[in-house]
Image (cartoon, rainbow, N blue to C red; front, side, top):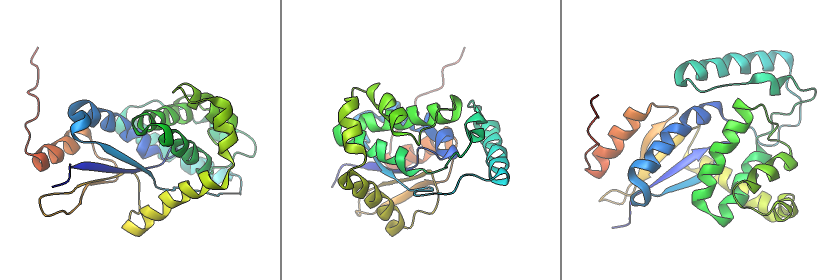
Length: 217
């Protein structure tokens, strides 16, 4: 029987994925290498070439407020007010794939860093220079990152991620899939945002493990 694993379909510019990042962190802390997480870029809005409209900005800000209310995570929506801002998710996804080439574990941490940079710090993560600076925080050589960034090879690798998501039938993010079970099948842990306790209960039931008892003060 193969070692159980999780496949995490996410996007660096998906607000609900940002909200889900503490849940993924808790999964990693609880299960560690016993339950490896394979990160796949889902492709939220890759290739967008039209600047966000005023109506689109307003709708996004309302949406982000919903995520804030559900998760308590900080948001700075001023990035949306930058003239000509393109909500193109492909550059940030490509950056994650570039970091993933060197270290899959680092890619998960880098994804969380991108979420925080975009949503909490209003950094424009559609810009290669910004992405290179953030990748350098994880030990990635900045010049090598920029040299690879516009290559067809990296672009194709990223779009292959999107194709995988489409082929499996992933229609929203975050999506977390677990498997294989004893019969070799994979199943959905969550399709869309779910709180940590719900996700952890599903995983403990699947793996036949016991959750840590709550510490009473």
